[in-house]
Length: 294
Ligand code: SF4
Image (cartoon, rainbow, N blue to C red; front, side, top):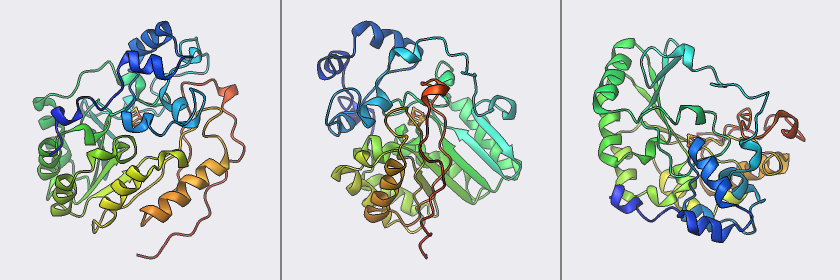
């Protein structure tokens, strides 16, 4: 069973971060953390081979650039504020609603396009009830459980959300980075609970092939056998780390071989933590890998 107790000790403390990454200063860490939490799981840290300039470290460690004024930065970069029928809901299409069931994540990606929302409170029971009731009455056929990361919820709370939406909302998608950032979260109890509530779609956000450790592959394999659990790679770009086409195709290929029954390559999201001028894609073509049957 995964709960707050089992989560404890799974992230690096401040001193550990400073010891592990000598180029990170305490002042930068504190200043960045005040704006958006700096948190790295031990699992993620174990996959970082070098210092702070590698593709995995760059996604999680702050840089001075994110503290500097950025004339190109905009609040709410994906335009969610104007599509909120209620707090914690985003509805851009009549038949599809996104529910932000939590603000929490196992680790915090510096490029997160919802980083400006982090100051808003965690949804309490009343707010979540109101959001779920609205979705059930709205006629939406599809609900996306998002956040934050929905898999930071306990199994009990996650399953309660799914059960509240059924049968009115037949298509449920969980958008998560947890199988990558905290693979221990994919417990047998979670898999069994999702299997019992199938069909549930899982979209797993992966940026770089180095994220796919053996531990992650095993977590993805545990989900692979769910009858209606599919995988997608979503890619973001952190300048200097994940902007190469080989990174993208490498992630897709390794996901493909270890776990995925379906790969969808999506448009890269812009990294708000870097300046536009630093956001240089070498190749922006979509993935041409054919979709597998089944
Ligand atoms: S896991 Fe997702 S929601 Fe959380 S910080 Fe990363 S991109 Fe943002």
